[in-house]
Length: 149
Image (cartoon, rainbow, N blue to C red):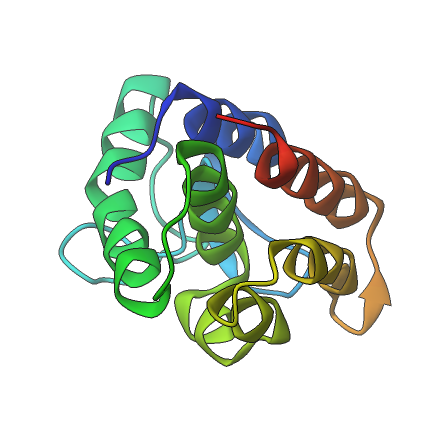
């Protein structure tokens, strides 16, 4: 399965475009639409040159496959497109390994999508603090996850 425009819209809205490298709330150098590394695996550095929106989109598409593959690998039950999109967005933001170890995934793989959906709201911390942006993002992911395809 591949992400739909719903996932891309959620990522772009949640991350917003930043041409210059910056530190995200967790302190990680980031650029474009929330990218922390380049397609060749190099980590983003604060001294890197700015990028264009087109380059940011290319970077997003170059790294999305990793998260699509992770969701495909870790989810052992059938999911609809909206659930897949919400999970890819979650993995893109929180990390594929955090998805793999999450209670969200455990509930989903036991066939309890209702309990899984409630778990999105627990992932709202960055740098040890509740972040308003993560609260909004997790709510958007949960709403997308619960939406019928």
